[in-house]
View 1 (cartoon, rainbow, N blue to C red):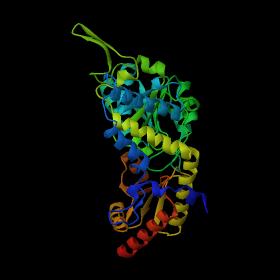
View 2 (view 1 turned 135 degrees about the vertical axis):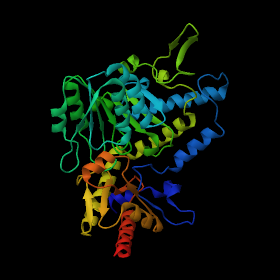
View 3 (view 1 turned 180 degrees about the horizontal axis):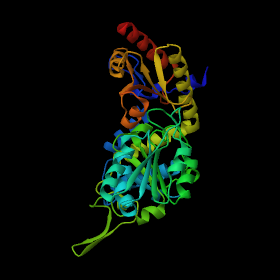
Length: 405
């Protein structure tokens, strides 16, 4: 039995069966992962028998829920190789994490004439917040090019870096091409000119071992729903000394020390950045998701999904009617175009075959412009994927080719 077959955990994921009891071939994990029963159960318990608000209740259940919420923070810190749980801020997702950094650290550290470096392949969530900041401050945005096979060109990054570069913000793994950044090298380059580096880890966190000390980055953001957890929660990791200097992002309950009309003092991080009632049940469920992924082993997940991506690219190349994008070795993501067929049409026909792919610009319109296409079809694998999903996709593509003649 192959490694691919032994790792696939379809039975743990009730969402992989249609209401009619048929197998659903879900190849859209890069957009949002399906949830294992362990996460669903944890969320159900937190919403039901265990539910209470956190941090301010003096009754027992509130105290227990507070312990669970903070235990989730400690678990995430351990999962990421953070020095302390105080470096972990719970947010609604990576989008809010990046906006938080732009609105706090960026607003106080980046000014007119300073430079922000992004890359051609970034998700809109790692472009638009920096554009807003640049418009408000007079900073400039520089765009790092890609290599011919769709990797962020670190040689090009080195050329762009200048004394006025204050921030480099890059995807650890591309959500379109699956290309993997040499994040440690990128951090070394950024730090060589005194710049900070932010990594968008949405596609890396579910399939790669994270170690904030080894990466040597300054900010790291990811979303819970891509790591088999619930929507509505994400993680911002930042060095504790940086967090200490960042002003509040939002005002309200929980983020204060003392409030008076004469003036207000703020709580230390991470509470300073978690105004209002937090994502209580989502944090509990995220803890369960992290436990699930960690038990399988992130390195093993990467090899499993990368192997499926290699297999799919090999099979698509045999069709002689498909354009493949991105590097040969990718983190479980394959983007392609079928000659004479719009990706949306392909996605619609595949849906009739119980195959789910993503079709469109994938919130990466600058990358689409670079590739010279309005959209691509994207198949993205998860820990529950196996070769049967590839077979179903290929059958659907053959049917689509017959329909479009």
